[in-house]
Image (cartoon, rainbow, N blue to C red; front, side, top):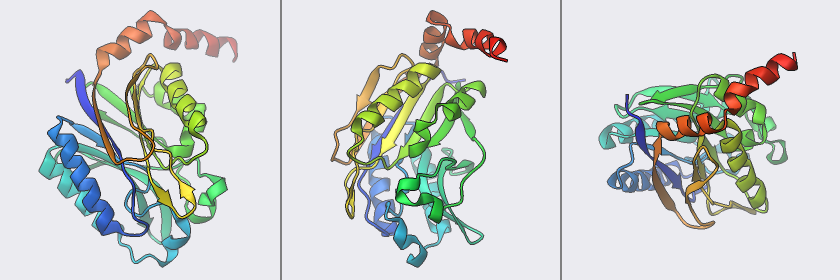
Length: 264
């Protein structure tokens, strides 16, 4: 089992409703990630259609096109990809993250559980009801989408499933930069897990996205981060031995069993 994985966080602006252009841009950024040694890359929330939800009903869209292209790219580049997508299935809409292995195979799909009421996600999407995990080497990853990071109960469920890293596909907007920064570090520190958070940049209508994608270690230290406005590829190693070191140094996970017993 591989203990060290080179991960990439893809930050990108998206064109509203232009699936072809968004897939082409994602491909170019994933090529850059691969050229920098990445074995696994994370793309933002709804990267293939943008975040203007009121256009989705009228969009000429076949989810299979996105799925096939992501499969092709992952196989061609020999890279794992997690991508936030607009999923259309049996007449229902989902805000989802799909994960492909380096052979182009779909290995997991997570449907966003906590839909964001302030942008009417609850009126557009069906909510998911299951956490989803997947493995690469020695790492078990848990999947979150944007608003999910405000719910520590969800990331704690992933910890209880044995996860050592969390991925976040997001379209987190201004002016809530401090919330974004604080919540991501909190999820890393409280779960003593890596956090790989890919966020949108640019604008969709009146909504400006804050970028600031991150790779954060289990101690809460920032390993790599982006600015607020540019298409960016962050690449950094994550090491399972660092997870073990932090969890041994401050044994929160061991001690939480005592807390749970006391509070029963």
